[in-house]
Image (cartoon, rainbow, N blue to C red; front, side, top):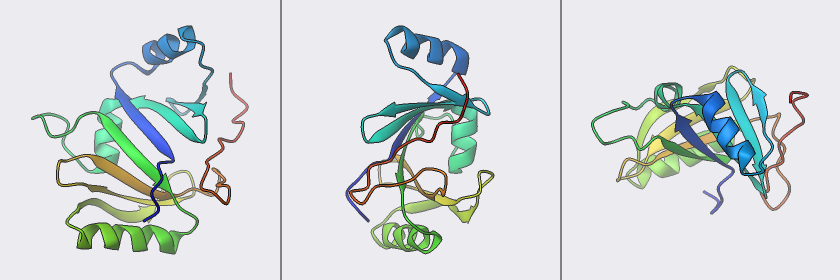
Length: 143
């Protein structure tokens, strides 16, 4: 697994309220399907409904285990998703969502580390990676 983070997703109670807050800070986001994406240097900050984030990661929201944040590493192929999930499992991670095709045309799975932090490993053909692993968001054509 490369030592790199591609996206940080914050599970929020109200996506519109959270977006307005970040935009008041001077950030500019793009909203697609109730999800807001901000380019943040070589990675992306994402705002998504907390309940949707927990469900997507295959974890329970409540009881102190899920902190409402998921880290993601985008990789270059479906095979690499499977490889990273296997390495994580061998290292002691719990695979909470086995890799599968995604609604956006990619392929992804999730695991938690020993302290319950969620990681998504994803291949997303719409989010290009530079040779150094830098992620660049596409222009979604939305304000």
